[in-house]
Amino acid sequence: MPLPADHLEDDAPAVAPDGVMHARAIRSFVTRAGRTTTAQARALAELGPRYLLPYDPATTDLVAACADPSRPHTVLEIGFGMGQATAHIAALRPDTLFIGCEVHEPGVGALLKLMGEQQLDNIRIVQHDAVEVLRHMIAPATLHGVHVFFPDPWHKKRHHKRRLIQPPFVRLLAECIAPGGYLHCATDWQPYAEQMLAVLGAEPLLANTADGYAPRPAYRPETKFERRGLRLGHGVWDLVFQRLEA
Image (cartoon, rainbow, N blue to C red; front, side, top):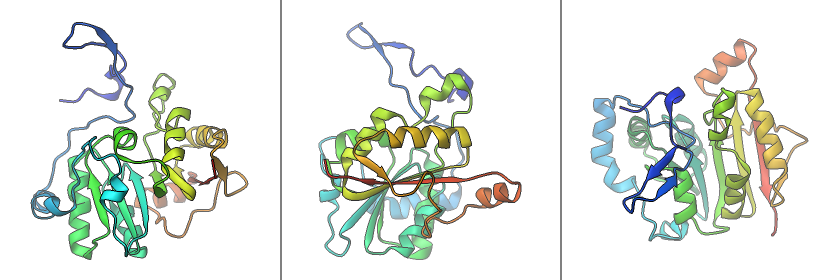
């Protein structure tokens, strides 16, 4: 059973098979136990073989491996949750291939179910840590865009180190995006929005497309939680940055 967030020890030393102590990588997510519904399990069984891509470091250019002349652009989405936004955007942009990274099986099954219901053929899924996928399977300057919608804000100060949007990861993202491509982040937690703006603004390979936060692009749908938050007076912040020439 996964440990609750307050008891995570990802960054504690670990003993490797050679007996040497190594520092564990700090992860930005918790592997939560979740129930996969019957419909999600059916989608995994029936559509998974066609749309799930294995995590394989030997595939060093996943974009090229998925190349389709009818879809010249590829967008990577990190942590798509239950997949509603992914399916919505993919339906609006049939000429773009979307590669979604999500570690939670119920979410993967839910997106596959939506793909079957909406007959969406322009989505592929890697059920693995997006950081490792980017490091090992995405070649430099091959992505047209990256979506990071509502990543875990890790509210407590001692957990801020687990936030996904940190300078080293943003540099990795920027290097994987082709010049002229974009990085779109969104959050409903203002302190995280402020950190995102500072971190993205400090990356020399990226330029802000807005004066601060961006208006919500028309392609990103409002989630039901977002609509509820807006009714309660909560904010939502979008950040859209463009990849510059090196």
